[in-house]
Length: 296
Image 1 (spheres, rainbow, N blue to C red):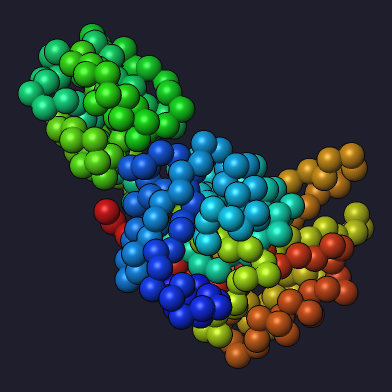
Image 2: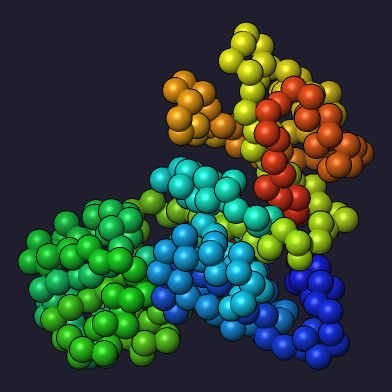
């Protein structure tokens, strides 16, 4: 994936320049960990964005970032349908994916003990994942904030000795925090899948791509979805995910999002074209190699 991104640069000196990678969240967020693991063979500059909408807008503009990572599903919380919709409406393509084991850590300023804490700050999802741990400490109030890494940064900047944060080990490193307890999430099989995105006019399909993401509509008739699934089966494609989202303004009509993996010798283009006659508004969201799972 790094090679494909580099090949798309026009000038030699750009190939050695740092790749500008957008993330949602602040430095030290899990998005940054995924980005650095994904592009570990090339120096990158992280471009933080407050929201996924901002991330998509900036990548489409092409002035501040060359690529971006977007969380698309979590093994506990399920699919991020708002992000599927953003990708469906954007002029972007997925060129890769990466899976990250999410480990939540309790961190404080150096020297602070858990008995000193009255509050712990973090994103609502991170707090929800760690409730069992904090049942041991009823004196601690859990405060919901907009970002895990931002919670750690605020503690460092404001010198709060009574407040802890739930965040990544990278956040602890960046903001010089001390980890009191590692991996405090209740469910240890907590994985997030991230898509690597580029502008559609810059993306180059990996010739070894074996996973395809598409979106489409189907007729509101008996067997319409079955026709799609039958084609995938005939071409020896294994469907790994299917999601639906209502089409705004068209009651009881749905747009479908499918990921499938090639297990035969049919090309991405052949399979895509075979689906066109039995779908409406078929869109390729990306073609890429199946991602690596990192336990960070």
